[in-house]
Length: 83
Ligand SMILES: [Zn+2]
Ligand SMILES: [Zn+2]
Picture: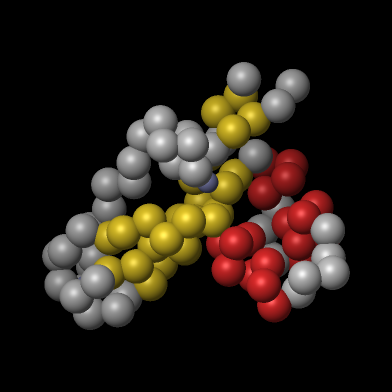
């Protein structure tokens, strides 16, 4: 069985508000994509185990969201859909 993240795949969008200024939070993509460039020799599964989130087991995709107005950042754990 495989799973996919509906946010990564554009099937739905995050609808979150910035707790500081009330603007809409933008979805900056997977957290792994941020960690990736700094550790180019590590496998994706290894990254998943070491970025602090057990998202392999729980099928969560961690997204980095941000507010364009005040710079607030928040990590969101998106539940992946089973296919
Ligand atoms: Zn995702
Ligand atoms: Zn804000």
